[in-house]
Amino acid sequence: MGLPLQYLSLEAFLAWENEQPERHEYHRGEYFCMVGGRRGHGRVIANLMRHLGNHFDASPCQAFSENMKVQVGTDSILYPDVFVTCDKHFSATETVFTSPVIVIEVLSPSTQGYDRSAKFAIYRRLASLREYALIDPDTRRVEVFRPNSDGNWTLFDMTERGSIRLECVDFELSIEKIFQGMDSAPEM
Image (cartoon, rainbow, N blue to C red; front, side, top):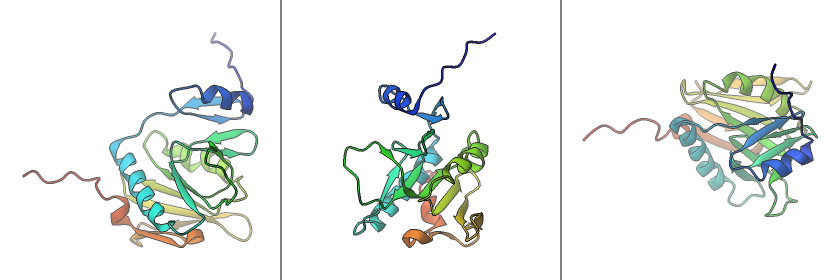
């Protein structure tokens, strides 16, 4: 028989997690260690951050990457790979965000199912969320989900279009630039 699970309140989790060397996601009292990503995963995040950061130079919106927390309700803390917030009321010392307008997850074989289902269901509870994007470095697929007028989310497959379009922040980036630097350079 295994040991009983120890459930933490959100406040206890945040205090505990701030003392840990690694990142943990939290959902309804349970917490899960985040594992490191592969080179392609990191390259896609770096490319997105560079281009989103440049796009938001003269804007109240800001892009953040995987080391920043997003709180959903009173029962979940997640680390999106990339998210955008246009919240004008914040301090430079904040560690938890609550109102992203865009969340982007870069898929890996081990997290793809979770990112497409349970994690997406958690994010959909955010009233601020306008777009949820999934980018797969292995297949080079780019998908964006947007809520429609009846509250359901519609899939927009951007792969064949050749670029990702994030409408709520008027941002477009070619698929080529998303995946730039992922292929090995030819040997000299």
